[in-house]
Structures are given as structure tokens and as C-alpha cells.
Image (cartoon, rainbow, N blue to C red):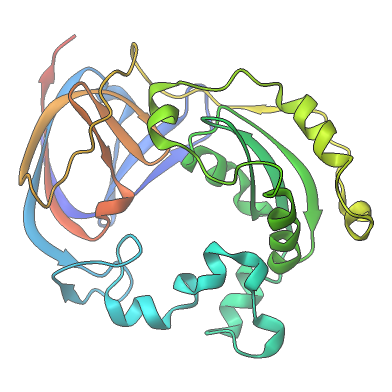
Length: 268
């Protein structure tokens, strides 16, 4: 079976295990049924911006052309540093975007992926965010009314906890043996008074199971810019990665690339 189109980020549904789909343009391919199959990825050497469709030689911030990178609100610095949100200063790149994505309730949470980390996400986007990070457990700490407020609390907590995931350890499932509930209790005791009214009385830990066969040993990154054709046995999916027997492929990094995907045969 062969498919071709513009590569976009992986989609998923919350099930046990997580159900993954590969997006190629407007179509999507269910991936879970093809675990154990040999898959060939061919770089067709054509790249288009995932927002405006402009043909480009390289992308910025996972799929954008340079004009979209410097103009769109989703590429502003405050997306990666929410505590620097400048919506209330009247300098947001797009106030409608800000209304929909920033001036809405956000969770500040703990997630266990490689280690226990602190993060934030829109309340309506929580499950997607946690799965995209490859978390095996997550639990909210607080619900704040805006992205900036959530960012300020996240920044405070990042002085005590990591706010990044080690992607290699996450994929190899080298996960710190830590009690996320206990860490949450310790963190709650540190939170300043001005955030106390936003704390959540939540005890249930959300758990995630990923479709991975066996032990992941090789996390060498597959580079489509240097290797036009890659072929390997699909052994799993986690976060935004396809895991093969001879390497891992960060789908989001190559968003916008025109590719051909060939599912060759089952090697089970």
C-alpha cells in the first residue's frame, strides 16, 4: 500500500493503548494496525508551509515558512514563554487568536515522561498535550483563567522542577521512579498565596499506555534531509515519534514535507 501527501503532525485518540494516525494532507492512516510492518518513507523533496502553502526550501518552528514564522501569533515568543504574554499590552500579533487560545482557562500540571516535569496547557487541549509529550502519568495542579497567569505559575514552579522532557529517555522508557502524587503535595506547599484560590482538589492521576512492541533500544534520529529514503520495521508510537527497529522519526519536525509512505509487509 502506498500513500503520498504533505506530512503533518500525528493525531491520536485516548484509548488503551493510544490510537495513532498519520496525517498526509487531508487524509489520515491508522498506524496501530501496522505495528510490526515494514514501512518505507520517501522524501519527495518538496516542502510547503503548513499554514499558507508557500513552497519553501526549509521550515521554521515545525512546518512554517519564514513570513508565517515571524507574523503568526502561534509562533510568537510568548507561546514558548507564556509568562511573557503581551495580550494585555495591546501588542498581540492577532487579538482573535489571543481570545481563543490565551484568554481561556489553562491547567498548570505535573507530567511523568522521562522525569516529573511541570507544564501548562489549555484546559480543552490537556489530553493532546500530555500524549504529545509522551507522558505516562499526569495530574493538574491548578486552573488559571489566562495563559499568562498559568505561565507565571509555571515559571515559579520551574525553579523547583524540570520543565523539559528528555526525549531519548522518554522513548526508551527510562523513566524516573517517582511518585507524582507525592511530588504534587510537596509542590502545593510552595505555591504563593496569590495562586491559592486557583489550586485544584484533584487526586486522580491520568495514565497513558502507548502502542510499543518490546523494548526500544535504538533512538537514533532519522534525518530525511540527509537520507531521502528510510525503511524499517515499525515497533511503536509515542509522543510525536514513530519508533522503528533502527531509529526514531520525529514527525512534527518534518511537517510540511511531501512524502510517500509505503507499507510493505508484516514481519511478525
